[in-house]
Amino acid sequence: MYFHIAYEEPVFRPPSEGRSLILQATIGCSQNQCRFCGMYKMKQFRLR
Ligand code: SF4
Image (cartoon, rainbow, N blue to C red):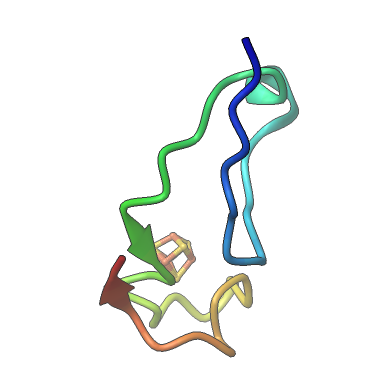
């Protein structure tokens, strides 16, 4: 059985979870203020 999940990019996850299913319940980061992190600077946080 094959499921197609349309992810909203970008999606980040550690390599050790590379084969895991992601259920994308939120977009972006609700904190988004860590100075060392630029992962979601281009995204406004929201529930999906
Ligand atoms: S800004 Fe980056 S490091 Fe900070 S909580 Fe969000 S995703 Fe994590």
